[in-house]
Amino acid sequence: MGKKTNNLPLIGSTSKFFSMIKNFFLSAILVVVATVIFGCGVELPNVKPVMPPVSHDTWDVLLKKHVGSDGFVDYKGLVKDSAQLNNYIDLLSSAHPQKSWSKEEQMSFWINAYNAFTVKLIVDHYPVASIKDIKKGIPFVNTVWDIKFINIQGEIYDLNNIEHGILRKHYKDARIHAAVNCASYSCPQLRNEAFTAIKLENQLDDAMRTFVNDPLRNRVEADKAELSPIFSWFSGDFKDDAGSVRDFVNRYSEVKLKPDEKISHLDYDWTLNEVK
Image (cartoon, rainbow, N blue to C red; front, side, top):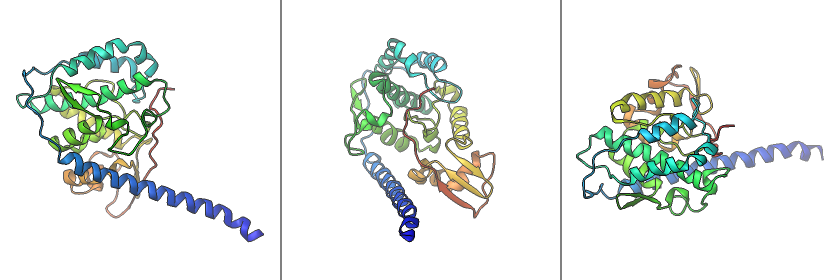
């Protein structure tokens, strides 16, 4: 009986371990599927009439008012200011990015759009414990990220379209992963200012530097690193940018990981990124 009792924690730990491994590889496979599906998506349409780039001032005001310096969000306050949020959503919907816009104008539009439409989903369903609770389903088929609710001058998108089919595909900048926010605890912080064309380069650098050095999401030491699963799920993006995930992380980390030291990954917490 003693041996059986001593073995019980091992069995439980082993089961949990294999469950974690299963979830990790499932997430990795799903990201590969997304890359294939959205990487082959349609080119950005030439929508008529051609509209000038929109102002993101309204979004900037909302973010400064309802997002803390730590990236956590006052969703109750945003519910109260939902009319102002909807005005910004309407503004985004009125002007589709065009080739005549600068790259920085296009990128800042799509990053702000992803974040604003994500916030709108939360506000429209508040209170909610996790964004994943809004719509459960098969990833990249019928989850919350597959809801076709984003209308940009008559073109219909979901959040996956914007992240994988537009931002990752067309701009190929790995820093995007620290700029878009999925309304969850383990996501990179929601920046408390709007992205703008004139400041975009510095904002993307700062967003990635903040993410890499945020101990809630990444823990980098000279002899080991526990990284966000984002660096595993989208490892190809970081390798394309810097040659390796390690080199990319060391570009932004205050502490530099030694060449041969171990990299592991933290669990991902999908709890709502709500201010306490």
